[in-house]
Length: 330
Image (cartoon, rainbow, N blue to C red; front, top):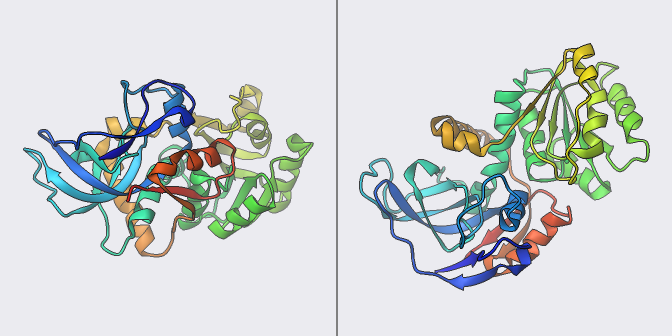
């Protein structure tokens, strides 16, 4: 099989596409022939060796995919050859075939295309856990999503609307990204490149919410946007920090937390996959159900052949990914 191979931790363009032996399923495992792969910003960090988990070298990157089971290992009873599944793993999906544990596979609806199934993986899982488990979103609340044109951002906007948010505000860079956020369902957009973002974001949020502020902030960006969002939060609001796409890790002003009874938490979603796989399976089924109801739909902006993985990752590195980028092994 062909796979993207990382032989040393380095910039993503130093990896290669190699011919590797076809994988074999051990006990409790399955082999999935991959039809679509979800490319994500963390893939860059993994390949560079800057992610919190470093795979043993050599390895193939990639945390989410969708395809067809073509081999079953011993002791696997709830899946069979021919099942169409979405897959969530720590690494390995940038390949034509993937060997993984059966617990990391989620049977998908027959109507769901493989590319959309892959796109409903890591970013929608992350956004769901952030909004429900960490932020405890309630119908009628107001939500601010930073980086709202990226993968997690689009997912968070769509899910916030699906969960009954009254107002969803999207923080973006540039008019093209604002268009993507509105397509995802955002009610308002705010330009995160504003010169005086610290005051501008707070003032615009106040105008959009009749002075109430936002009840929930989803932040995959960090940097100055995080500090500005903190000032725009309502009493007893909740902020969930997912990542630092800006490259800057923010320092939280604790006085804001005290004065407004604000809660700030973090989310590292892969911990849920490893520590509570049953919860992840339930969330994946909930995401499929929302897709079937037409309440969420991935926005796929680019599809690349697996051999062109570097083109895909360059868009992520430059912050030019709008919605999801999918790799197609075939």
